[in-house]
Length: 356
Image 1 (cartoon, rainbow, N blue to C red):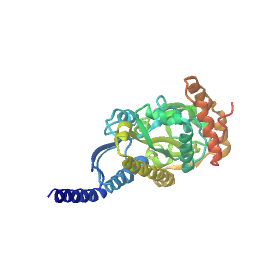
Image 2: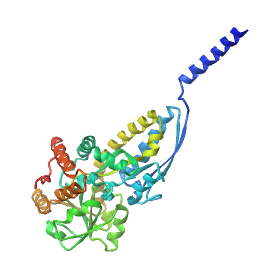
Image 3: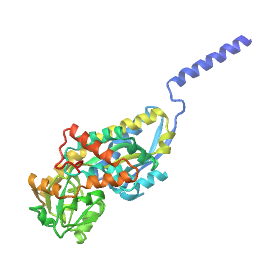
Image 4: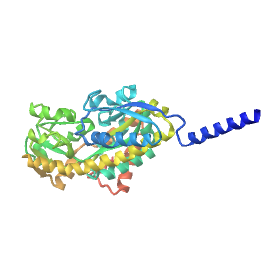
């Protein structure tokens, strides 16, 4: 009798083991919120909704788990300048952080904004940024200090002038108020224009009310935000494609996830990075074409004027690096590594920002 009981019990356990072999140890359900201060008109935000969220859900479901997403864009939870803090505090688990507004907390990530006049090839720039992160541990650490991990750096297409007045030469900017964001304000130090800090969602109204006479912004947003309606002159100068934002995850959330779920999220984030970069790259030309259809005039400054503009600027890169060095941060190391990696990638800057 005892033998039969043992045999029966063994059979039950074996069956249970076989069933469990095809399932996760424990099916889990997570409720995640992903936020952005920008609306889905911004391609880096739209790609979160169209690719990152559904693909993560799909692949996590294949592991036997469930994710319920709340998507809150266009400042529904936090403005562009508040997303970093919202993810750090756990108000949201994931966020589209425009780090160009976070020069104080994430100074090393401003590297492309203090080395303007590079390439319009966004994919090349993002490859360089990936290599820079791998080479400089302090960059990841800065995000960790703010309670989050970068899943995907997000670049944007090249910057130009969008103004209410025509620009035929650089001196035509003199006396005008030009809006832009983050350290791009430094790009106006070489001309007699007044820089005004702002953000994409505010640019249209700021120009229509006369607060700005124009803006420096990237191609792909000109048509979606209808900037050409209030500023019909688009002057190509090619300040270069920029590393501007990042898709991040709260560190406590990340560390609480099973490894296989982490792997899925990172895999999809890598895809999202490339999708967003291609979307910006392709969207730039289409945006300007649509602006022209809407009445905008597009012109282009010569290479000579572009080089002269770059040379006229103070060495904003060396100034930035020296300031960070004095604070115990690897400013010079990041600057020199970025310029070296850019050169290795075939990127030519109109000025050598490592020169003294």
